[in-house]
Image (cartoon, rainbow, N blue to C red; front, side, top):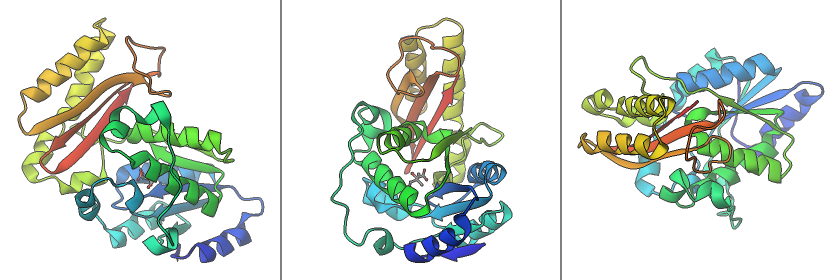
Length: 279
Ligand code: PAF
């Protein structure tokens, strides 16, 4: 696997191999886990060349503490990437990506007034800027994102469409531990006790899914989640919403198969966890 830390170096290499070969991009912020491995596997299967990026993007953090605590595990990340058959990894410094702080502001309107957007002001502006830069730098044919960040996928889909990036977006399923906890780089920051408590998010999602499937209203399903968290003092529930998985519009009832998503975010100690189910 070749490593690059400059845009010019990476572009030169990509230019020499682009010709007729398709390029799959897996953008990451590092602290890689099996969830990332499945994105890389999908990219490996569908493209001749697999490029990944590791960049803890300061512009998408609205909380300095969260940025400082974001896990950084470069050496093990390289091993996972090698094992997953990644061909090139781009690991730029902050000045390489942002010679000046970006003046550009992206506003995703209704896509970012709910859920993550409402609780992390400016987050999707930062995600949109870095993803647009990575699309321009790498010029991939396909880009791979995990369903765990469902709202991020919706925002990037819109960005790709509005700016006409010739990139096919692939949403890959969430990978879970045996007890249901969705894999996330942030799980590393959980204490042993918190790790045992963390599957409550998945339990809440499955319970509310069963309620909806059994004919209960979205209000009843959301109330049940709120009660579950109210009875679990280790957690502070931030939001629970039932939405259209693509448009993120609030849903009053179950939509067509594959269209309904129930999404939630909760704080457990110092760690903020998010998860969702699409059904
Ligand atoms: O999902 C992530 O890890 C990040 O938000 C992304 C897409 C790599 C942009 O920094």
